[in-house]
Image 1 (cartoon, rainbow, N blue to C red):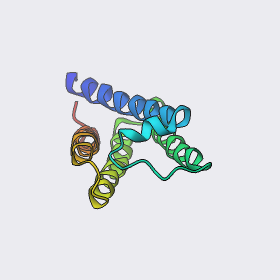
Image 2 (image 1 turned 60 degrees about the horizontal axis):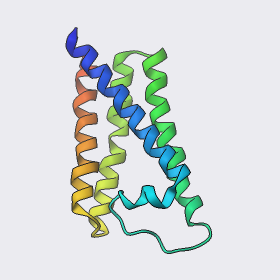
Image 3 (image 1 turned 90 degrees about the horizontal axis):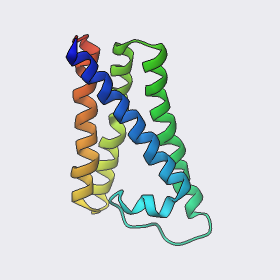
Length: 128
């Protein structure tokens, strides 16, 4: 039973963290982008709005996990976490393909994906 609560706590932490990151992208998109691992986009009047799109999607991803935690099952939370783990994997691959920061690619995006998968699988399997 303790493992179950640890997994639920990790799922909650992941959901709240991505909501916080999304909020940072909405409030201060250029500052948030600095830690992503890619060079800042070219300067232009609409760049901040494009960056804010990422924030909206991050918040929606976190809210999806929170909604399932409130009204779904642990297995459902695990399935969504596993599906959403493709986001940091994709981010990592894009940063690496663009020859961005390998430190961010592996230290942030890959670690996030691993934590998501390691949280998701036992939830899907029904570990208590």
